[in-house]
Every structure is written in structure tokens, then in C-alpha cells.
Length: 90
View (tube, rainbow, N blue to C red):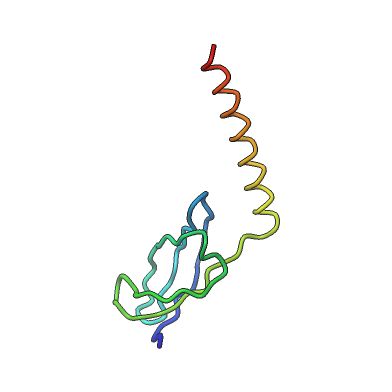
């Protein structure tokens, strides 16, 4: 059972990870941690890197707007890579 709660102070979604800044309810220290994107929206249990107490954090979901922006950015990258591959052939 968890002894602390890690509050998410801020987060950023990258292509592969969720970069989170968290606050430990036991020692009140702020720390950063990366989580796999597959863990989005889940409650994760881990130890505080500062005081070593076991706790849990609720990882955020991407909003519909964030998902749409990510998909648009991914489409742009795929289009650019296709153009570069074509240029390399000639």
C-alpha cells in the first residue's frame, strides 16, 4: 500500500513519453520523472527519488486537442520524410 501521493505539478507529452514534474506529499520535494506513453491515464506506484517512500501518481490523459495536434505533427513529419527520401534518390 502506498504511503504518499505524488501530485502532478506539470506534464508534457513527447512522442514516446510523458515528462512529469511531481511533488511528494511526504517530503514536499519536487522532482521530475518520465513515464511511457502507454501508461497515460493510469495510476502508477513508485518510490520517491528524494525520500524513498512508496507512493502513487495519477498520470494525465492527452486532451482531444493535444491528440489532434500530435496527429497533425506526425502527418507533417511523415510528409517531410517522404519528400527527403524522394530528393535523396536524385
